[in-house]
Every structure is written in C-alpha cells, then in structure tokens.
Image (cartoon, rainbow, N blue to C red):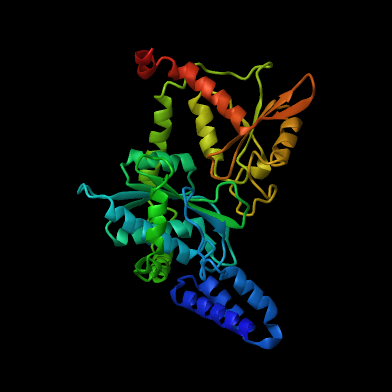
Length: 399
C-alpha cells in the first residue's frame, strides 16, 4: 500500500509538471514514461526513470535544482531537478521579479544574455533556447534584454554587463562540466557573479508560486519565432531575429579595446624565431578559439597552432569527456599534438573560455609540467603587478 501511495504521488507530480512544460520533446518523454509505468508489464524501468526526474525525500517532498552563487547547473533532462525549458523559465521569472523589486532609481532596466553550444538533441534542449526564453521572460515585464548573437566567451558576457550598464547578465553554460550538463550563471550589475545574500534572495523569488507557472505561453512564442525566421530571410542573427549581431560585434570590439588600453600590452611585437617557444592552443570542443586568436593578435604574439580535433564547438565533447583543463588527462590530446608539432607550451580554455590550463615542455628532462590553478594565478598576478600594478595611482598614494 505504501509503495502504491508513493507511485501515486510520483505520477501526480509528473502530471502537474506536464501541464506547465512548454517543450514538446520532454513532455512527450514524460507522458510516455507515465503510460509505461501504468502498464504493469513495463513499469519497473519507467518508474525508476520517473523517480530520477521527480525525486522526493523526507526533507523536501518536491526538491528542485539548487540555485546559488554559481546560478544553476545540472543534467539536461525533464523535471524540477534538471536543466530544461520550464526550469529556465521559472528561474528567469524569479530573477526578473527580484530585479524589479530591488531597483527603484527610476532608470530603465536592462539585461544581457549570452550562451554557448551545449545541447541535448533527444530532448530538444540547448543553451541557445534557454537564452531565448530568458529574453522573452525579461521583456515581458519591461526589462530590455540584449541577446548576444552567436556563441560568446563567458568573460565577454561579464564585460557586457558593465559595458551597457545592465542590471544583470546571464551566461547559459555548464562551463567545464560533462556533455550532459548545462548551467545558468548570473552576473550582477558590477559584472561579477552574484554573492550572498543576493543568491538566497533570488532563490526565494524563484520558488514563489506565482513565478513557478509560466506567465505566458513561451513555447508557442518560440515556435512562432522559428516559423517566421524560416519564411523571412531578412531576419538577421542566430536567434530568429531576437539577437543583435551589430551590438554583439560592438561589445566584443569594446572588450578587446579595453584590454588594449589597460596597460597590459607592451607594444612589443613578438616574432617567431628558432629559439622562441611554439604554442599549442585547445578550445576543448568549446567556443574559445576565435577569442583566443584575437587575444594573441592584440598582444602581438605569433599565431598558435590549434588542436584540430578540439578546435570547433562540439556539444558531444568527442575527445575529452570531462572538459576541465585542470582534470588529469584532459590535456592528453593537446600534449600529443604539441609533441608532434614541436611545441613547448600548451594553453587550454575550458568550453566557455573562462578557465585556463597551462602545460610546459622541459627540453632537458623531456617531461611536461601541468600547472595548477594556483601556479597560473601566481604567474598572472606577477605579470599584472609588473605591468600596471606597481605604477598605479592607488599603490603610489599608499606608499
């Protein structure tokens, strides 16, 4: 009897979810599981899968994916503990309501949203769609939202927040997580990721009943946008006319211009010689390659050699299942390519290009050193200090 009660609660929870889910693929999958579970001959595996999507425990009868300083991160799947269209809509609604409640200076509110290449074909889930839904939610309550066109590196999204004076920025990415995951990073008006107690306040707003039900039929809106884009060739951008290629190009240009004006660039042109190190770069199947190329050009460095098998965005992460450059074995492909091409240094970005991995070849010992994050931070800090830190006005006035 207890087992029947648990299953009844499970089915009820799943069916309530179905009433709100705008995604045809995830809704159909859950409907199919419920139908199988209600047929005794094929129920065990269906019930087990449903329980993974709609878990319950003593502390929380209906747990949700956690929201914190890192925003959201989890497996792309149906249900309240996964990353999916409904969870993103609920999160965007809670976030939008919080922004409206805590900005009272009378200035027009703006948001900026970026996304990477992650996707789940079977469930029709993707960073791109999550970003589009976020824009639709924000603009439905009067928050102007710039949707960056095409894949962007996370540092550019963070820069964009202060560049356009936005109240909030959202980067849809799971960073260096495995391919089945996606995420939702939130940046506040200072361009930094949210910190306590803001994250807790937003989490409470998301959980409010009025924010858990979609305010509009966003699924129908997205379908209409896709249909219109297929019949209107004049619509520009990667997001069915919602993104802004010109503004995105300007923000990226401003980002690299800010670097050029920062004092970090010496102006010296580094030419490749027989004794200078050769560099291999890998984007680890992420979106970093074009931004790394631009960075090398800005710093007047000779071009790097890109690892061909990891150069382009690949949501399946075909050659590196855990694309964290600090993870043991993650740089094996890049190191192998570097050895074949006589390179001395390997530079690696994680898939959303906000994490750096470095490896160096010692020609005397014929061994590679993989630098830790602390070691890389020390090197970068030392360079910052010598380039601009010790000469800045704040330092001089404190001495």
